[in-house]
Length: 341
Image (cartoon, rainbow, N blue to C red; front, side, top):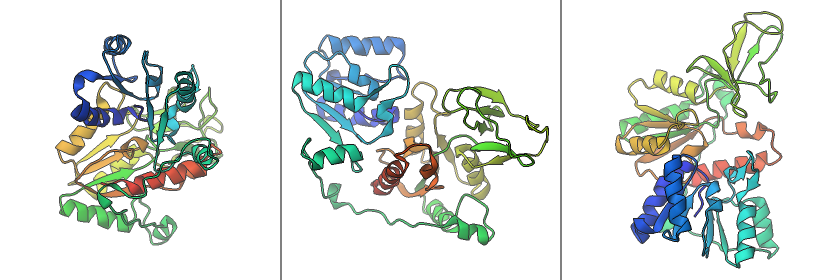
């Protein structure tokens, strides 16, 4: 049973344990310690575990009698490994299925166009679920043009309608999720005099500014350097921040709603063991008002007290250097909108 994000494993494990019992389940993902991974690997190899749950690397589990592979949210880009060894989980799953003559179930409300095309051509079987669980209805979606907001003097990332909705949620003791697909404080920094942007020496892409540690960081290779104060090209001190990340959004929320409690979930806050689970449990159990985060906060989670989701700069992912940018943006926004909060 594969899930796209490590943050989804606790919720998935809980559901499977409630139905099949803990002793039959093994868990594999990159956040386990070496000892834990060894124990889980041995449990699988000795055929003591009947169900293996994990992120993409779990596809390599040493299962001796494999009978079914389930890939949840099969459209997700996380199933593609960009690190050595490079692989796509769906391709590995398809190979294993042919070798062992077993079925693969690809589940998604917004399937990958390649998968959907194969289903239409009859290469794979299409199974549809036309109704939502418990006849649930889709939430109302309001699109706000920030150009109009800017013309009215609102320079914040938060539109007036979103501000009013968050205020109403706080008054009603309900929770809010704010999704912004950029971590850090600013997307990039640029010299106002010559237009120079600071780029990674390895990847040649703009470095992201992080307020914590006052540093510039590459989100591709991990290269870090202290924040610059003068332009390396012309020597000007007129350095400005452009774009916005989750850190900056959290700062703005604190300014607009000083009484609200917030918690942030992105790659920078989940770098420790069990960080995913701790943040989600704290948000759910401590009734924190606002959860701010990147993609990992909008994938498959269920929070009964969340009645509002705000997507900041919803069209920003259209500009990423990927030929599937339009498809990915559609999937992301549809997944956000369809969640049964």
